[in-house]
Image (tube, rainbow, N blue to C red):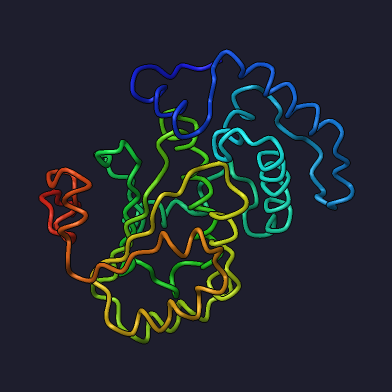
Length: 260
């Protein structure tokens, strides 16, 4: 049922209320709740729903084995994919977004934090709203997260997002803030309510002073829990260097990892 061992298993017990001996019965209960759910009520328009043990375990871990919250996350997961089907399309086909995946806009760092969290580095200056369809950015994020969350360690330890805003000017930031996926909180909706993962922090670096003004507009789209996990570091990398080995941190964030 689980391949966790050592520190990760102990962390799952301590932080997520996971008891491997109880996993089969808890998963079976969640599956019955799903079987009793009428998808037509939510008008999902989706005909197939995954209900295998490994898939359901993601939702339980993301909601600390609270069955009601795990079930609601499962429902939201499919509602999101139905609501934005025109954006996501066929997630098995990457060809339409390969240019974004190859652009260096989003990089999963090989080194993890000292808490074993997966670090996702976002180089915002690589965002070209002329050459890139903003909707495709959401698809790239979903494809990436879908792949990463297959790891049981990632399910337990979670993710941190490192957003590097160096070389991003006011006009570009203004453009970003006006794009529908940002203005309507499509990405926040995914992170907060519709994906079975633990997002531990969003850390912004190298940002100009007016980012705080733009962020003030975005904060109402966030739940309080997410708002409390957004950190503005500017050019101060000291806290990041306490969280990660500098050898695995990009040079743009004061580390020694050259991504060029």
